[in-house]
Length: 394
Image (cartoon, rainbow, N blue to C red; front, side):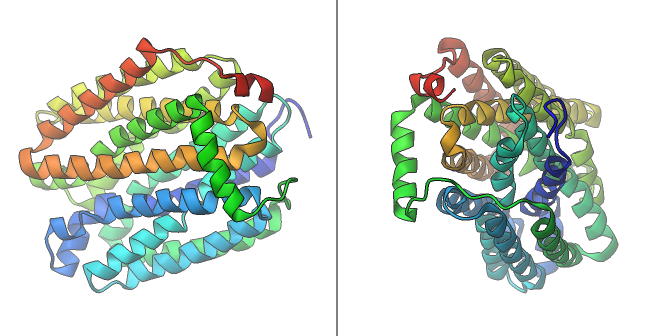
């Protein structure tokens, strides 16, 4: 394995992570179409993104620690098969109840991208762990954003159900391919599942730096989802745009994917604080520009570029910095961090959707500005520093 190049298997993992992550975000530009198809109100299906994220948070907490217990390749393949089944439930759903149940299960079993991120760091050459995990995270963010483009295109051409059927087949094919290309990998120290969960809870108590990274991650994803949970509804109400146009906004968000890789390299060089402050400033600027989106969609595109670029920087910086706190427990650290991250996204979705229904687009933008200021303040007032645990682990 070369010390100067990222192995091909990690690039494969990045693509797989993107395909897996896309499943969790197909619904966002489709909410108006789904509501119309099921003959229900937007309020009846508006819970779908939040329930998917809640299921994902629970899956992260209860399933992700298994990467420190079970053989990683087998765990990844098994979860892809379950995700395929959940996608079928959504595709066949005839009522909002079945749709929401499928969305929750999809989130619960959709943790494969988060298994691949620390796995990539484990397989990376010496000194390239941050770059490798950042590359996989770039794949995740690319999948999240391109999912909106794909969802809008497929829904316009063949209907939203076709999207879920095709995604189910893709997960089956991906499971077979990863079973072939991924190496076997098992944690050297075997522990019981109960001890792993207890260890995760104790790790949260003992590592204040981990709590801070998790809080910042939660705020970051709440900011991210405040926009993505409401933008398709706003575009339809304000301009009459359907899912095909709404989906195209995923292309404007590709800034976050490239930013994630840059953040991984910055963490390898010990530049966390600068990265965090920059990400907060980008997200704040993005939401300020989004106030003017009602006058021109140009402001919306530029604001989205800034918002997603900042979110990618913040998420990758916090996740990679968290990994350094205990190199032998990346799976559990990722479980704690990503659980908080998606709880933040779920709360951000619920609050932003409620604010939009009550007071409109300006309320959502104000919510985003407040969260961005909190993000900047948490780092400005109390800069990041290494804990003794981090130093020992190194």
